[in-house]
Length: 168
Length: 135
Image 1 (tube, rainbow over the protein chains, first blue to last red):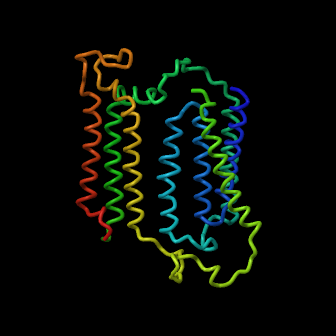
Image 2: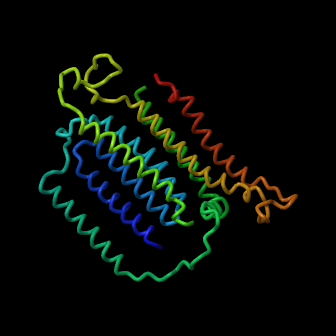
Image 3: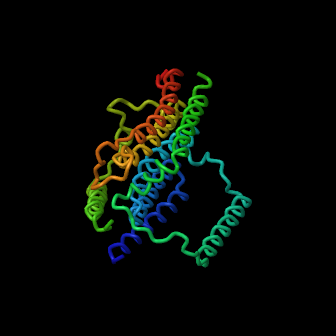
């Protein structure tokens, strides 16, 4: 883990945090969604630095690509083009609840930081092909779970069509 | 994997960002601002703009986006399968990356066929319901 690693970790980590902050502070929903895409890209870079290249690629493909498309479409469907019209939790109660959730999250991070977890997983030799580590268990031990996933996707297809075509 | 292998990608990202910043920044620095009503109107392929861009979008766009995501996830499962297929189509562990003769198995092909068959039912349903038609 040389300087190259550290410099990149801090660059992408800070960019991810800055984009996330921009995401929650932008008034325009579309601009906020684009900042979230930036956050996803930075997270993907961090995944790649953790030797999880497949997760990094999927992060870009699914989160930065597909999920954001749906976010933007929801924004367009709800007609939130005019930022002043957004009825959100700006009152005292909203602020109190948000502060409470923030304190709980911070406490959780602190607790996790203090825990000394036992090393349950022994250091295994990383396979030469990174994707093998995912494919080997997925298509052998967890074959049934993999096949059931297709049923889950089928349910999602039917649900999407039913919801969108109900009036048609 | 050595993280330094990604240096070219990092350089490319740096150049892309620099390019965008310079294109926007230089044109901003060198422009002379003389706005007129016509100049400030939205560019809509040369014709006068029709109404506001911020109107309600049809739910059909949303349906297309949802179906795109679902079939996108299907692809996500196919990437590890394809990269691991050589081992999945062999009943014994590979030796030197090759399957010993006479050990070919249809296990890998079969499991992906079942997966895709179930999703094909979904595609057939979408097709039958006319969700791929625009109107």
